[in-house]
Image (tube, rainbow, N blue to C red):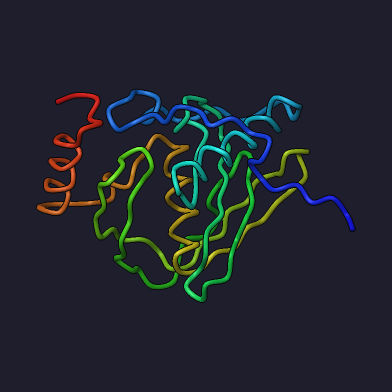
Length: 181
């Protein structure tokens, strides 16, 4: 029987950056070194994501300002999508816009209905620099857009407007983990 490695099983859970931390609002740098350090980062991202019961995690959420994210996320048909992408860029975001439940590991316990496209294509490379194209629909498309936003210095609250935005940011300010009160 072949040896199967479970993503994150050799990783270290890293501290999570929370809303208010400047790391979350700065755009991330392109990865230029495809080495053991990058592989360790991806393992740590999986370990951290699983430890916090997430479905996706971007490198800047653990304080590493590089364009990398991981996911273990179902789509609307409950098909599991598991992977990572380095230097991703959204090449397609389309279909209908769906306002759905969204949260973030950097805003624990804070959720809001957030508009996202129902179809997404992300292109980048894998750990070895090989081209990678990831297509997502439904909830998985939401995940791909959410993590891509992080790498550009955004969080889901940036997509909210009006009363919904004010209420969500107020909930974040009042949360026990709030960086600034």
